[in-house]
Amino acid sequence: MPHKGKRYLDALKGYDPVKLHAPGEAIDIVKRLAVARFDETIELAVRLGVDPRRADQMVRGTLSLPAGTGKAVRVAVFAAGEAAAEARAAGADVVGADDLVQRIANDGFLEFDVGIATPDLMTQVGKLGRVLGPRGLMPNPRTGTVTADVGKAVQEFKAGRVEYRTDRVGNVHVPIGKASLEKMQLLENFRAVIEELMRAKPAAAKGRYIRSVTCASTMGPGVAVDPGRVRLSDEEMSLAVPA
Image (cartoon, rainbow, N blue to C red; front, side, top):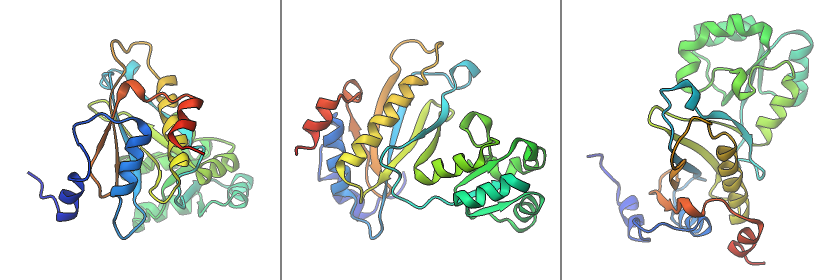
């Protein structure tokens, strides 16, 4: 059994780990328990009623968080010519073509959070699959990271666009912001993630789709959210954060 630190064990005493909470309550608890010396990331873990071994039940895509992620996102762009200039103008942190491919392959350069590529460079970028793939950095058309419009993609990821995909047992892990964000900002991002997952529900998925939802900070314990209450109306949003 993994060892749990004193701070983590103390946090477990500060709430009911069995109770299913409303989204607003869960975020209140997670923010209260995020007491590390750095600004912890708050993440949603959603268990979906899908079989990701079947191609028609894979849930994957991107969405823009309305309140942003609360962190600086480092973007690397594989592009040449006018597309490279467009990426730099949009604020990309690293831009290159064959030189960037070689830098990653030979020097192990991985100091970026998102990789974007123009379609014409995917032949070279594809050679980095074993390096970038396991780290979630491989550009992919399904997530909007293989595109001719690199300027727009850079701006969206800088502003709070995130990727999501089911793991091998049907879980989706999506960050919804930093603990320093206001409760309403985190709730806006929470709602955006849930609505996006509902939109992406595969037609082949049968039975209950959202099985469980857990909210947690980087160093804190998971707080269970009632799956039957995760779709927030405007009225529920306003009641969760009184004026």
